[in-house]
Image 1 (cartoon, rainbow, N blue to C red):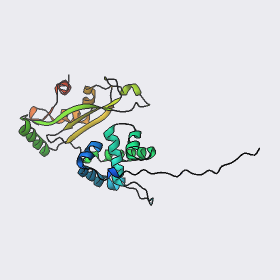
Image 2: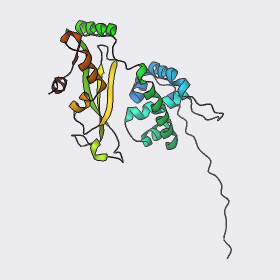
Image 3: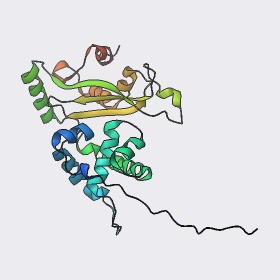
Image 4: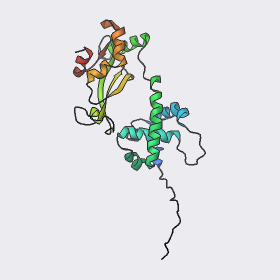
Length: 230
């Protein structure tokens, strides 16, 4: 009996509409993306030239859409499927967009996260003293563990003391809450003291800050031993 052959018909791609990403107030935007409309517009403007791709496809993603996809993924800290289900894009699209936009954001980091010049340092000192009465403070330091999916390489090194996989990140901000230093180079199993001592900021402070008047970092009691070198 002869077999029956069916033609190979390509399945038509379906697109789900996502109107909610265009018409949210600031509260709804912050709830979903951790940023307001003005900040999303700012990100779009500064990343626009690097993100946009020359294409004649009539369904190509806009720069705003790619920024929102990336922010949604970063805000949820979840798998790509969460973004897929909530925003209606294909998983491969989400993966490609998040990788592309994140790389561009990282390349732009040094435009905004900059340690103080001498003039700026005096302004920060004055700001801390005015707002909290602390003299000679050039920044507040703290750390946090950024939860990640279990990596395929050197997986045990990323398990922190609380038992989940993470990156151990240290950051310093000024009196206005703006980041001036970020170190996210070490896996979760590394001790806070090791993360700080191997940072470029620690080397800089040891070289340039020889007395109290040169400036100090302010931290909680868990950071005091680290800053004192114990």
